[in-house]
Length: 398
Image (cartoon, rainbow, N blue to C red; front, side):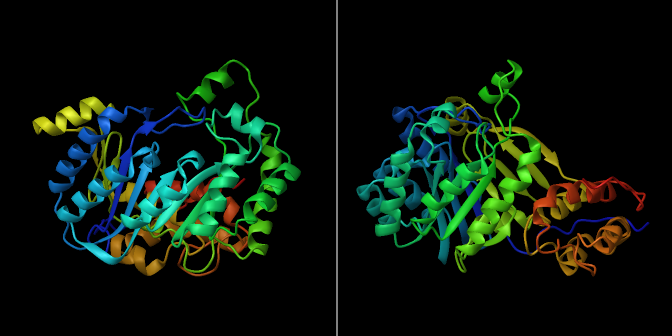
């Protein structure tokens, strides 16, 4: 079998993720590195972010900037202005750069929207999750359905950029009818982008501790296909195309930042707990904000873990993540990055899936319309082929 190589992404790094770790409280399902908000740390945090950014000169203009968390919406407008001005001094920004800000419904006010627009934010992502007050309380969300409605109403009326609304499906007690009610409520605000995430129990989360005590937390697995059909059909009827397993958008409103990640492009992550992928390395920064800030001040290392990613690992990621998108993974892109060796590994395992009507025919890897919901299962089948030297690796597709 030919040797697998990895030539890296086709373009210089153009995407940056900034992790703002502060939250007013921790949702029971959250596995991200967050801490209780400490406003007195914000200024030092922004100073440290600026210093980290200055240590990474970029070869080309920045195309996407994503402020995630945590809750970046907790940063005061003046702090956001200072942060973005500092980053503009470090790097050049593309004229059409997409700058995304994550916010909770309680962060969205008329004054905040004006300030966010003035400092260059082009996209707001708001975590509505559900309009069911009882479910929100069980998830430890610090908003209720009326807060979400108020925030979405403000975005629909006053925000000139794109806005994204998140829904969470699969919480215990949710029925197809309850999901339909959430969808109708959300679509009344005509969002141009909707993300629908299945509730999962991640290790070391409050949800995992509750599960260990025997609590019922999620809907039975047998209900997942029915829930998927409910939101997929309703969002399609509303004119939102499913361009990734969990993401739906009107034309021109797909997340450019997320698409860069799904294409396995390089990205830089800054902030406590942020991950970076810069060929051929991947690393994660230390998570505790005070320790992270202190290390940046002293010029000490802030990486908690770093690895050199093998070509086989990168191939696995490119295939498994790319399959989650409607565009799939183009054979020509895999040829350019990995050389012809990927074909001998992956295509023998893909052919039976093509014959079964799960994958589209040809050398590119693309799920048939209507099969996107099976992306993870197909990815598991092809993962064996990506990592093994034996091209005939097989696994039962469920």
